[in-house]
Amino acid sequence: MNIKDLFIEFFKEKGHVEIPSAPVVPENDPSVLFNTAGMQPLIPYLMGEPHPSGTRLCDYQKCIRLTDLDSVGDKTHHTFFEMLGNWSLGDYFKKESIDYSFEFLTKVLKIPVERLAVTVFKGDKDIPKDEESANYWLEHHISSKKIAYLGKEDNFWAAGETGPCGTDTEIFYWRSEEEVPEVFDPKDDRWVEIWNNVFMQYNRLADGTITMLPKKNVDTGMGYERITAVVEGKTDNYTSSIWKPIIATIEKIANVTYEGNEKSIRIIADHLRTAVFIAADNAGIRPSNTDQGYILRRLIRRAIRYAKMLGIDLESDWEQTIASSIMDEYETYYDEIKNNRETVLQVLKEEKKKFAHTLEKGLKEFSKVIESKKEIDGTTAFHLYDTYGFPIELSMELASEKNIPIDIKGFEEKMNEHQEKSRTASKGKFKGGLSGNGEMETKYHTATHLLNAALKKVIGPDTHQRGSNITEERMRFDFNCDHKLTEEEKQKVEALVNEWIKEDLPVTKTEMKKQEALKMGAEAMFIEKYPDIVNVYQIGNVSKEICGGPHVTHTSELGTFKIKKEEASSAGIRRIKAVLEENN
Ligand code: SER
Image (cartoon, rainbow, N blue to C red; front, side, top):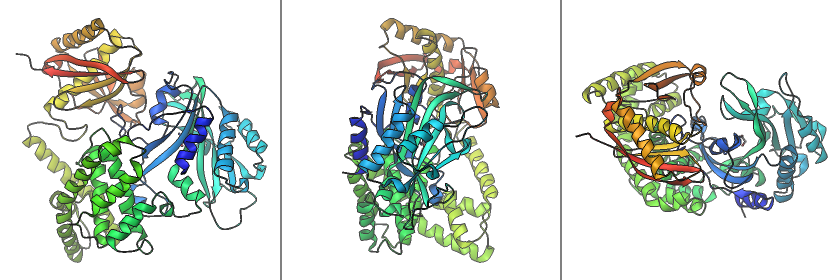
């Protein structure tokens, strides 16, 4: 049995309910591209909302972290990983959390206690030293020399600037052939962090004040790729059993061995795996030049470039075969992989078609330029992007391999000029930002804010947006609510939105500091990681939301708002489907 299954089985035995992984594209959060931690989808419950599955939960959550994208190619970095996690929502706290982690690591995974070390919070002016956790570790015979006390930067965990947070205790493993040192030095990178147990009992407010959460929670996270490599005695994550079949497929297709071609093979394996999970997500992300679509494009195109370097025939079905072997590994765990197999293969094929034949020409162009110019100026970088489909990051990578400078600023200027032109060409239609920003999508986007405000009035002030999805034809809106809306409630909501549309309220945008926006009571999503400066969209005096836009300028542009359907989305979450109809 693999560690993922062992983990779930272990925590189920300890009274936890297994919950499914949330999608990689957060449904309720336009400002974060991907889900980056197991606890992210659980924030409302850590804040105190009762979870329908109870107070003890466990799962493996699909996560994508982009900060590591350019490091992929070495032994340990991945863009996609699964995070194993167990949670207590106001149930057990430090003792059981530490007991469970210790038991799982030493009894189930049979890791010798000598190879383990831990860090705990050393205390500061606000929060006392975490002696309690240290004592539990001592009781498990972790020697006092293997316990390091560290400050907030290491032993305090928060998903964002506001929201649930707390001190944590991190578990480290000695990942080296050399003898385990007697004293734990957290700076020695042969000690790798394998598990993080966060004791979430605080809530950080916008002004930095820390208050107590209604309940004390536990949030733990363990990277599946890393723990598997560790237990299998590998220092190269990509040689663990998780990657074996995928890497064997690539070796076979390219007719090369992993040894000697590690970097290219790791990049192809990692990027195609992440691309598979993005394309399979029910959000329907496709390669494009903005947001998640752009990441998907970058991943596929970088994989194609490395496939070419490995000598793979790009015209062959190589990407189909590799993606299929990836999906074989994951389809029993994820329905969306099983159900969207054909779509994923199609997405990869089409993106390859778009890029594979221009790659060759672009690379030639690149070589020609550096022979004569010894640098890639902005115009050339833009030409590579515009004509040959080179994401700027790809040109940057090529330039750094050749050790020549590239003028990113110049590229951006060219890009802006170009966007300016196409904006004029499309008569003021927006480019960039949210999923497709045609005229209809923009209207629906404004309607989303009105609906959010109307639900607060009709259902109650604690009703918040939990997700939304907009196409040219309709809008979908998820919100927390403990009951099916009555006919009367639905009619009231609809009437209120239409009343505000008729009033032709102005929609205004103000740029301000995030703190200020939150202070003035602008609606903000639980999970969003906002930049320091945000846009607040205000509609008359009925709605104020932090939002990236775009929006219409006056509500009368929306037409007539009609609720088509109201249904359950998941426990405690309702979903409204609505349309805007033109007024005759
Ligand atoms: N939220 C913590 C982390 O991501 C523990 O799950 O490390």
